[in-house]
Image 1 (cartoon, rainbow, N blue to C red):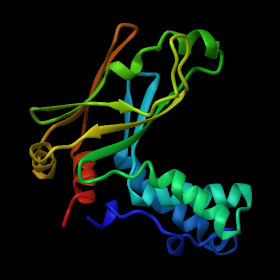
Image 2 (image 1 turned 135 degrees about the vertical axis):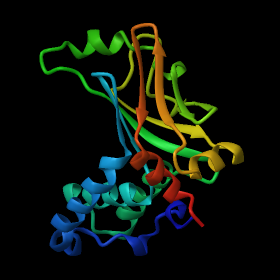
Image 3 (image 1 turned 180 degrees about the vertical axis):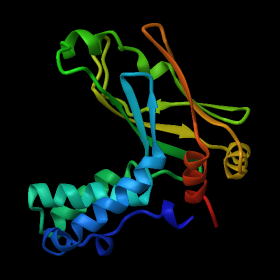
Length: 195
């Protein structure tokens, strides 16, 4: 389960070295994320995180903010390691994508309570999403949410089985969608848990 190992300072190249490899790295990440991204209706997308996706995010943050000191880079590593999937959970970033002409306050308000209405189906197993606290209140919700799906041994075994259906369902009163991910999604997630 090498893709579940926490990221360390030794894994991060930093802005100077990363600049020379960025284009190739981004192309590789686009391919990895393609299999791990799920569109759920017209307003919600999810990217299932793993070591590769989180490494890219750290490198990009270090590049954008020109973080070169170890303590700065270690701070980013700490933030993103908190999003790492574990043996007992899958991790994803959920994005609420609004049309450019939409009023974000009005549209996001319609989705308050979303954190009670997202589930991942792996074969017969239904995994309810646990949202990161503090990203929603009684009258507003952030457009970016960090979520975890508890993954017990039976659900993990089903995920590892080729052909198992993997689906994301949202049953919010104002947003109801269910989408079945293809075999590339299942295989990509299963790879994270391969011995």
